[in-house]
Figure 1 (cartoon, rainbow, N blue to C red):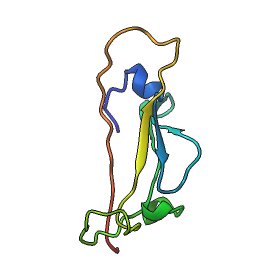
Figure 2 (cartoon, rainbow, N blue to C red):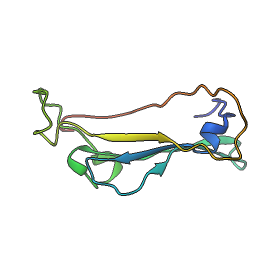
Figure 3 (cartoon, one colour):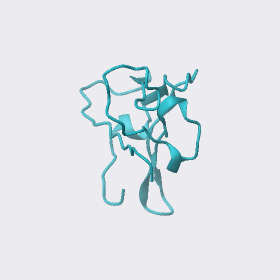
Amino acid sequence: MSGVPFSSEVVEGQWTEIQNVSAEEDDFTPIGATYDPILSDYQEISHFVGANGSTLTPNEYKISGAINDGTDINTDNFVELDLRVNVPSSSHAGKYNYKIRARYSFGSE
């Protein structure tokens, strides 16, 4: 993430929160980035999710990669997530533009 300016209150304040509905998570987990003054760089704060409510190590979070039939019966072939933005009352007024990045892997490796 070196060289990427994360000056937005949205990212540094971790306003965006994610919940893995497929894993029946009860709580939302904040995601974003935090500045590490020792490294002089931003460190990503992410949340790993997997199909079928996987609670495995980050390298094992996968969707099957099988041909999708458009249903949610194949629980290893999709992940349902909820995202929300939790804006603190102390935030500055204005318009905030930001992006959410999703990374995923599928199939067997």
